[in-house]
Length: 159
Image (cartoon, rainbow, N blue to C red; front, side):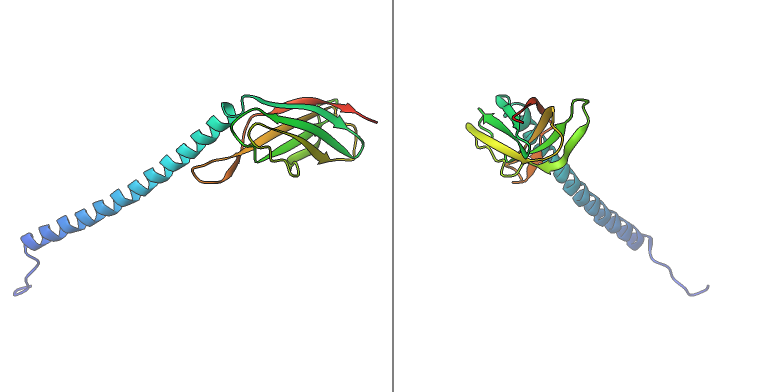
């Protein structure tokens, strides 16, 4: 090993400091994007929660009627929030789900301060109750989200 020279301590220190600076910049950039993503998600959730709780405070779902081929009901939206669509569930007298899940009510948009008669095609057993779940659009990302608000009403029969 005679005649071999290593890296001088000064150059080694400069290399370690440079590597540390680059690594710190990468971690800061990654942490910044992660924080920004979490902040945006929280903002959207807050906007949807406000629209669903306060924005739909005066929604009235009423007059559900079953005629053997469909269930018809009225949605009276006395709010500034437009309802993009509704999901629904139909229940029998025992509380079992007859139809529903992720099913959407066809053509169920209800504008702000609007009244709509909505029809769910259904030809099965007489439902005792219907639950509807409104969907609202978040302005911040222009996507539609389902509210957790559940509006339940009894169903009358025309048969």
